[in-house]
Image 1 (cartoon, rainbow, N blue to C red):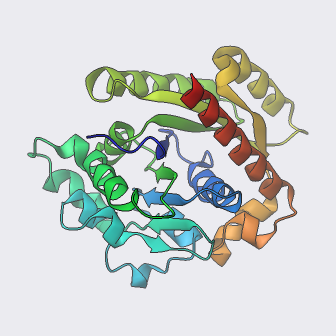
Image 2: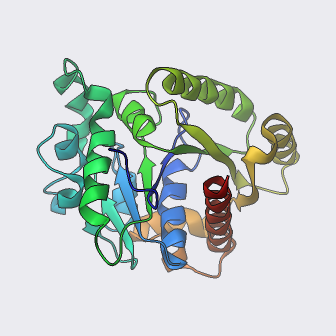
Image 3: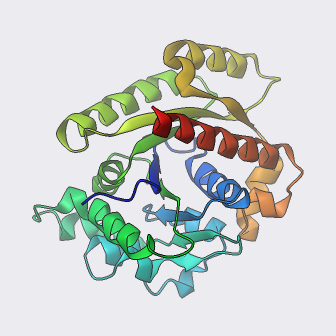
Length: 271
């Protein structure tokens, strides 16, 4: 049995680090919650930056996505509310670093998260206020954790920094997605590419935007996330930027991105 139709599962993925993947997971999740969705962010990065950025103290993470991956807990048991209404997080711990070796011999090792989301969705769909979005934050590498997220998801959202090697990294990621699609998840689709850390004063950044739009066409979101100091400051306060400074350019961009994501979802469901 699959997940309910009203629950959409999106993985934020990029094999390159420092592209704004975790920042986008936190702030897109917050923006979706702010406009009425009920959102779970699953932190699958051992560094746990999404959990920290949502104010979940490391010492308080008694259970985590590690427990889900090894089959000791369900997602519902490890998920926690955040300071943002309607936004929940399944936090990560450094234990995830060893999970690949622990489950390497198991036949269902690539499907652990898919099974966990199925159980989570079935446990929550009968409530008056079911979850509508799950967002995965992954490590910046193609390991078993990332593969689990790709197998469990309906679609991939790709944060792409406006810098010189952007297209090269994007080509590698698209190849990876294609491999996962062929071997493990034939339904996996590209939801969209969001350009991040854009500085309009930088001619190279403007050229990267043009190149990516030419290469990916309408898969690139209209919304571009600017390079913004308030976005950088917010995680040190354990807050999404929308709570830290709602009026800044970064917050407004993530609200626009959330609206665009929902509009795309409606078109996909209608198709």
